[in-house]
Figure (cartoon, rainbow, N blue to C red):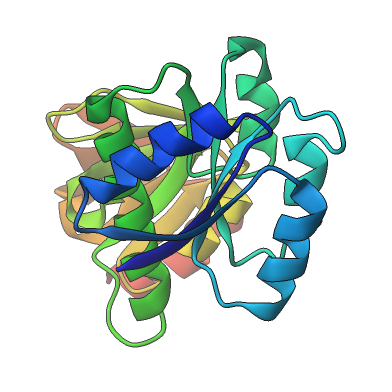
Length: 229
């Protein structure tokens, strides 16, 4: 069960969120606040998993409020203004809901929050089966078994996934390799990370996965052959 609060300067908007939460078995909305300072005081004293937060509020913007929160509290922004999507992405929001919020989008956001909460709770207890990547202004869940390969492009990367659209995320390869199990994935080039179990053959300094060919960079040759041989 996700423990949540909602913050919005409009009481009617809070009633809508309360109504939506009442329809879900995944979330319990403890309190609602029209004053951000009161919400921050409550959050400093109470263990809460998630906040719904409006962005445009007169006494304090939602962005500034979120910057004051501990990093372990999940955030779903609720706003009538789509131009804040990019800024919410930089603040690592779980999702970004445009008002008026419909039931389908609300349920999708809560499912993301539930999956991410389970992920963080189990991260150090068991072998990870998936990772979460921030892309398209929200969290995307990617099963490790479905990753075909990862390609780095300066500060961006592309994650090629079996039977799914390629994910483009703003993240360098060195950051995503830290999220991946070291016994399952290997960096073979400054531009490529590969799943070891999908490598079909190696000829010289070229790796083959299906019809794709990947060069082994000079920096990575020794590590690759030590692990692959």
